[in-house]
Length: 307
Length: 306
Image: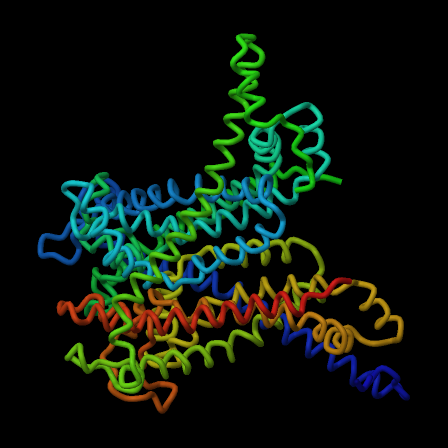
């Protein structure tokens, strides 16, 4: 490797090299500002169209109406049906992913031999690598017919099967991130527990889990924001009919499914239907932003630092 | 785990428990919890693997009859038995290459700036929070963003270039985070040695830090490729769902990608399209898993201990 410019014979070359350094510095700064710019553009474009939406629809209608039918002739703009569907599918997903992910993480960390762990973690990442459109298809073609055998009144598009499949999509995320947090707990804490005669179960539940709480909570929140923002699974397997219901056997459109549905159609630019895209997008963005800021704060506030 | 389990065997526990001393009764329950917990952990992992198995087998069963050379080399069709994935396969390749060409230099440059140049102050903290927020933003929001910026303002149309820029913005935070970790893992002693010889900051970065961080950076880029390959929602939002009967020859031409084609086929009424969709899923899974495996292997083989 040539060490060009390291030995500079005269001041002029040094000057050139300094200018070069300045230019490179500026190029790097410009590249970094792209990511900041992205956030600003997201906020700006969402705000812009949302303002246009609220100049036509009063905020009270958005918040207190119980029907969402912007694409029908009888237009109603109550956001709640989309939010409840998002809530129900995410809740189902979390009730699959959090217990299974945490149990598996505690098992891998406390019970399993090291080689087993080294195999299982990357192998389960396969689940995270499967494209979401594939999960949607799987929920529609395989999981729903299977569940229909046991559950009466189950529609062929429903929130239950998309929620369950979504749970398996985010399972590796919960598992992997909480296992990392558990692995960071110092060995001496475990040994202290065993010295007091605790079983592995007691060490895992009473020592490891509280000590790794901030990392585990961060993993759960990250998984939740993935579930809320997930589009293809719910669009394919939960349907596109906005319905205010908490019954998971029913078909209901989530926020993301609604955005996708409008994008598939021919909604002209500047129409109210077009603005609803961004209003729903804004709601979704705010939801994930709040959760992410909360998780950042939580980690910062509750992290146990070990020497 | 290296902790020896000094707990008595189950038989001994049971015999202890049969004695009526309250203390041993309690002990029996504690051991029982331990065993149940152990089993639940194993079951959770087992269920995870079972789902992988069921997913693969069910897709394989439905798709294998449809998967042949003609399927790979013919265009989409209204007739399920003649529909193929040629346009989607080529479109996927083009749009991802273009996205990586944009995102790779930007991501690495940002990572270098954030690790080697920036001073820690309020600005750097804002950028940190900003990047971690961007990774949590749902992909469909990136679609809305491109719809506004690239289609409405810049008038780039709904072609390859718009799709690639959307995907580039989507994977940029991933690439930045992976590259930062790789750069951070290069020991500071190397940098100090280089500075001691009179090298400038950029010379140090270019000649010493980057070559050592490259395997880690590449792993991140490969994972970004796999993420972009499966991305559907953002591309549908910018209106990439079209019936494409030609290969794109220009960056502004319309295009289609595998996930969109799969989504399109699942929503068609004829049942025969389901086996076509399964066959396309098999191709997509093969591509994505190969790319993922490449990243894992690269990570294992090029891991360095300092």
